[in-house]
Length: 273
Figure 1: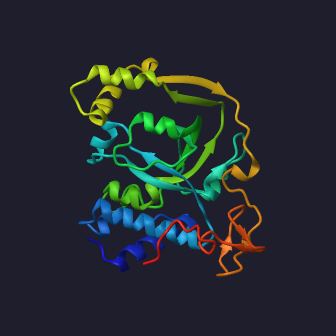
Figure 2: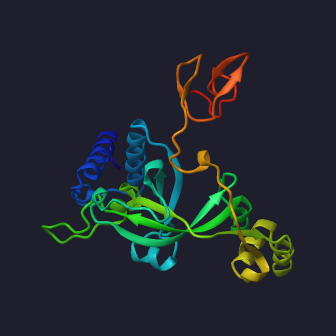
């Protein structure tokens, strides 16, 4: 397990590599015993540095979702990354090549959520219930870690990729939006398929076997998006009259004529320890 100093150092070097466009040596070579949990610690430290620099989290990336790709890199689950506000590019716009080191593009689907998801035990229908719409997207990948070591030829591993924010570098969201809704009848179909099993277990097993036509209702839709709902929107920022903390667009609360952050207004989502 990496100590905190090593995690912080790796995160700082990854950030410097992104800014200088000079990839660093593979962390998997520097730390041969580095684990996937270590890699996520580095990723979290990297994201924390960016948040401290004024960036905001707008979305999440899930990669290596196919079983074949997971087996190729010796993992049993997808890898995850963070999409920040400065990583979005307009549909039909220009993506500056000079911003990247070794960019690649992959075609993806972007799920725009209407409500948060929290596991474990999240099913495909839970995802659809939380989804506002789905739209095509282009993911831009980059490598702030050397893909191949120039001295040994050693290829980067999953811990290198995860540390490097799952290789995520940008996203273009565009095209037609489609609304995918779970059919209420699908739940009954799942119960009938495995009536002897507990509800949740039976549903998860049935959903993996039932056809898309049985499970989902799909419709092309037109979506009106307000400017403030778009990623990277730079709205006015105010200061809390109580604690002095900056408050992003439309997140302030006015109490008896005073502008407060949600924490000072008694609407805090966390508990201080």
